[in-house]
Every structure is written in structure tokens, then in C-alpha cells.
Amino acid sequence: MLTTCTTERQAPAGVAATANANANANANEHAGAHLTAELSDGLGACQATISPKFLYDALGSKLFEAICELPEYYPTRTEAGIFERHGHEIARACGMHTTLIDLGAGNCAKAASLFPLLRPAQYVAVDISTEFVSEALARLRLRFPHIDMRALGLDFSSGLALPADVRAERRLFFYPGSSLGNFTPAEARAFLTRLRKSCGADGALLIGIDLAKDKAILDAAYDDALGVTAAFNLNVLRHVNRLLGSDFDIRHWRHVGFYHEAAGRVEMHLEAREAQHVRWPGGGRDFAAGERIHTENSYKYRQADAIGLLEQSGFEATRVWTDARCPFAVIHAQALA
Ligand SMILES: C[S@@+](CC[C@H](N)C(=O)[O-])C[C@H]1O[C@@H](n2cnc3c(N)ncnc32)[C@H](O)[C@@H]1O
Image 1: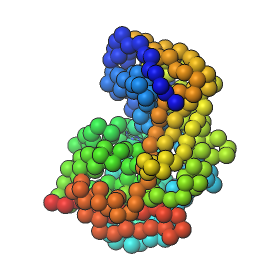
Image 2: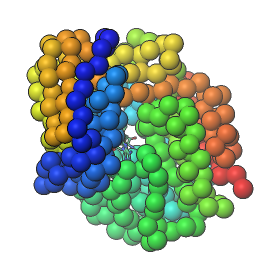
Image 3: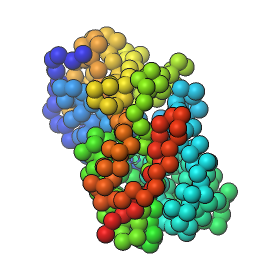
């Protein structure tokens, strides 16, 4: 692991022009200088980091879809099973004709599975991977032509500015997939507090949260035998090369994914196979062999802690559905006045 940290930084915030704007229509690509500054700051830090939101360009989103098919990756299957078994109760708790706002919608499959029961008045699919979510929504419109739908390509990690045509009444934020676990608990509280503000007086949240479980299950889920998670993680370097103009050579890196029991989170890293120098406009860095870039955390909660986090953020958990075989919680939480 990292012991020293050798970086060059001449103009950390001034490298936006090097990103290939035509590479794909991703919200990242359009966001410009502050994201390239975030990337060069993260790569220049003593413990190099890349935010997990950069895992999702168009290919990253497709690779995540493939991960969901893997026998080792239990969260998608488990959560979908809870929706299937308890759909009617979930719909009763949420109510019908809500403004359903899907945070990190991806292929929109989970929300779509609930459409017949929830019958949303409006469906808003929010995702940083703009091209991917727009294509998913176009397919969904053909299946549910009577539902008012729109896709929003935005990065919700620092704020959630919803346009005026997103209905303010009866907002139901849908945040499945345990994506909340990508935030530290303090970041998660700040995120949920912002969400509470966007709920208005009568809003609510339906959230899926992965619960702590056996290390062997977690290790396998984030480091599968086929190497799909490895490809997903390594692809972030291609995305960063496009955004930042860096020259990462993917063949010089390998995927590492494991459950860190003391920290209560799965960690994903990219580990340098050999010593190397990586350049980007206005900066660069030496990486020693074995040095790692931290690319994702996935916190695993105890159910009581997840409920406590919601309460500290201005929500009241009204219903919880779990899977007895594979600990995972789907929680309906009402925004408190
Ligand atoms: C783990 S996937 C979950 C996809 C889907 N909701 C599910 O449960 O299967 C996370 C999704 O959130 C999106 N995402 C990640 N960070 C984001 C951010 N900061 N802003 C907007 N979308 C983000 C990704 O593009 C991806 O589609």
C-alpha cells in the first residue's frame, strides 16, 4: 500500500478542455471544470481516490447490468425478490399516483417492476449516466405510454436541483440498490437531509439498504469469478482518461474488492501492477507497484442503524421489509414536518 505520495500539479482546475466532449453523452462529460478538478484532486491526494460516480459512463452502466446477473451479486436479486413478495404492501405504504423520482435509475427496471402497483402520476429517472438512462426511458415509454416520464442526467452527490416540470406534489423518492452505501455515514446523513428538503410537506422515500452479512458472501459479490466486477472497476480508468486527458494504461492495474469488517464496508480499489508515472494536463503522479486507488465504498448497515440514520435526517421509517435468507432491507420513510 501507499507509503509516499509523489504528485505534480500545475493547474489542477484548468484541464477541462482535454476531456473528449464527444466521447459519450454522460452528465460527467458535460459538467466540466469542477469534475476534472475533483478528479485531479482525488488522484493527487496521498491516498489516491476516484469517486464511484465515475464508474458509470455508458459502458460502466452496461457492465453494472451484467454484474446484476452474476450468481455472486445478491443485492439486485434480493431486493427484486422483496418487491415481488411485498409489492402490494409496499404500494399501500407508498400510495398511488405519486411523483416517483428514481435516484440512480440505471436501466429503470426496478421502478418499472412497481409501476403496475404504484401507478405513478409522473416518473423521473435521475442518473449521472445520461445516455444510458435516456435509452432506458425511451424503451419504458413504449411499455407505459400513459405515464408522464422524463430522464434527468445529473450528478446528485452535491445537490438535487429538480427542474420546474417535476411535480412538487406527493414526491416519492426511490433509492434502491443500496447506493446510499457509497456515501460515508456522515455524507449519507447530509444527502438524506437534502432529500428531505426536496420532499416538500407530503413526500416520502422508498429506499433499499444492504445489511451486514458474512464476509465470504460480500467478498465474492464484489470480486466475482468471471471478472465482470474487475472490468467494471478498471473501466473507470478509461472514463477518467476521457474526462481528464490522463494516460492510465488499464493493463498496468488490477481490481481489488473485499469486505473491511472493522470499517463495516466493502472497498474497491485499483492496484498498480508495476511502478509507473501517469500524466494528465496540468498534473501527474508516480504510482509505486502495489499502490492503490480507492474507487468505491459500499457500507453495510445494521437495520437499526439504517433507521436511525433516516430519523436523524428528518424521516420516519414507517415500514420495513426484509429477506430472511439474505439480510437486505427495503424501507418506506415519511418526510417529517
Ligand atoms: C448501483 S447502480 C444502481 C442502479 C439501479 N438503481 C439498481 O438499483 O439496480 C447506481 C446507479 O446510480 C447512478 N449514479 C451513481 N452516482 C450518481 C450520482 N452522483 N448522481 C446521479 N447518478 C448516480 C449510476 O449511474 C447507476 O446507474
